[in-house]
Length: 221
Length: 245
Image 1 (tube, each protein chain N blue to C red):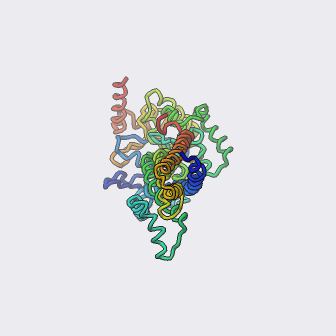
Image 2: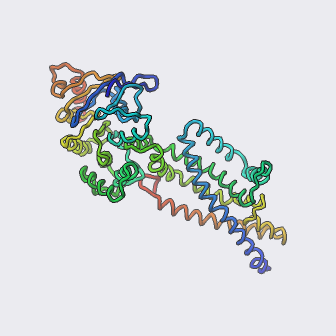
Image 3: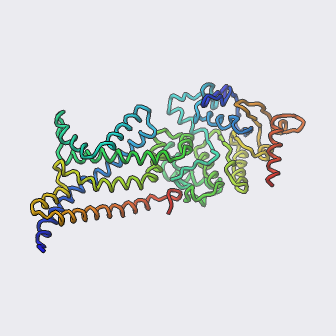
């Protein structure tokens, strides 16, 4: 077995790719969740027009393949004079897609909150906005957390689509090496292992977060 | 309140109801379920905005289209719910402090001090760190009373505060309400606790089908010779209670 292929070619390339993957995944997860909360809230309690718009957004991004979305962002937008770098296009695509999925989990969490929580806050003089920020959303997020965690794990894996629009991340780097040395099996097993490690670390992190946010009465422990 | 009406789902729930409370009054709303008691209470602080009529607090009208004015008004009207409605994600202490901090903009340590005073008043200061899911019904309702009191309300609306409680827990909540009444709090309370009504209420207001049918002092209305709806209603409740015993 040629060990130098691994130590000198594959691993350095994959590590480089891993960095790019993390630069996609981490901001996409953070922004995706942030916008997902806002969009999910608007979908659940917004005025009818806002609700229709945000529902349409969610239907569009949950209803079309991510590859198509990335192609439109990278190859389609230049037609109307908007040029995005491969990295920006990929990141934007992931945020848009992830927000749409998060919004669905958040919406479900919001709908599970009893109406009395709203009445109690309003009776104390909370504005609608403050009621959402301080009372309803903190509860909804706890209820939505397992679903949102699931979405982050999906995100880690669909980030591998970035290389299709020439943003060379983990899968992209691996594919270049695999093609060059014609070692598809070894390379893709390694790539798989990298993703498995990322997902495992994330799962542990999410467990920790769930524990940290745990409040008696929310879920079973 | 003057001539308050409300139509919900095509049904007239409140039919031009007028009611007056003086400072320090404890008036009790009784009557069959579906008679409009709950709707009436929720109209007073605009949780359910009335279709017509006016609500005056210390002679002043509220313009509900001015949101700030509405929020300010609600701060002066405490509300206690049948099913407590404590904020499930906050412990007992934070249930009381959150409105002080976020609505009244009081700093954290002052809010905490004030909250502890109120929790102490209702006898649950030792439960300050516990979450609603860890409290009994009676404790939850007492925390919710502390939460309302901390806002310094001018009047308290109580919507069947003991109806969701086990019989042995009713006493501890009634004792707190009694203390409030003796302290001169103005209160309007819907309840089925006849004994409580008889001894404490300044006035009974009997509601049925969206209207106030009878209104007066408990001794007058509950007199068997008076032949009132109140008397019939209360004796039925009493019979029921005795059956249970």
